[in-house]
Amino acid sequence: MADEQWGPAVRLLWGPPPGPPARGPRRGLTLEGIAGAGVAIADAEGLGGVSMQRVAAKLAVTKMALYRYVPGKAELVALMAEAAMPDPAAGLDAALERAGSGWRERLGAWARELLAAFRAHPWLLRATVGARAVGPREVGWLERALAALEGCGLSGAESMDAVVLVAGHVRGIAEQERAVSAEAAVGGAVGGAAGGGPDVELGAVLGEVMRLRGADFPALGAALASVARDGGQDQALDFGLERILDGIGLLVAARGAGA
Image 1 (cartoon, rainbow, N blue to C red):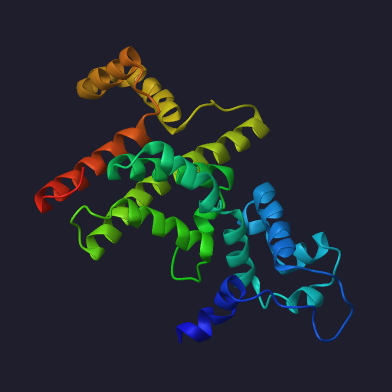
Image 2: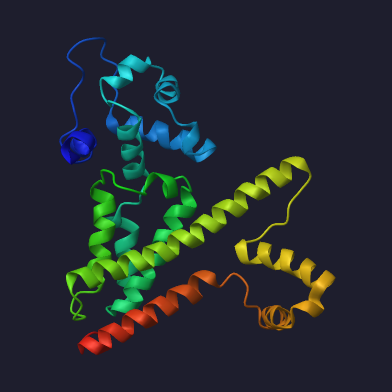
């Protein structure tokens, strides 16, 4: 069943690039070019703006000509996600090397590079969820995160869970940023919206609540005052990431390994 469902996408992602179609005009299409056209549309309009028809039009071919290379939208999105994910052998490896040899530093660097990828292509958040075909770049990212935990005494399952936990935190922050950006775009179109990251936006809303009903929420008022005094806004990524790494560190210590 899995092969029937994802087999075509897997073959496109991992197999040799197909040659020109046996019949019809030679258009010179490539999987890289097709994916690039889809990425350009998604970057401008989101994943909802992508269709086989739109991509074909961008490439100046008919939709039927496109189908000779890519059998459907699911396969198209898989190719797009692979193209948009940074090649781990480039920037990610360099970031991990700069981070040093410690598992904590390397996993932290991995998380920050992943957030940068989501920021560059917010539609990747939708394109990389659920059961689906994954390509060499995405698998390469997973490989490097797991490699950071080698020698820590964790089981394979524990290492996978740790990586999923870190990735989930990154995705949550990226989702908040994407939502704020979308709201700001709508607000700008109708007369303006506050700028800044998710914490800044939330702080502005809560500040207004405190102005109106602050006496009813003394603990919240004290927390917001501390944020304003200490400049603690927009630290959700680092704060959450450090706490997750603290927890993984306790497990590593219990196994008697790691640095």
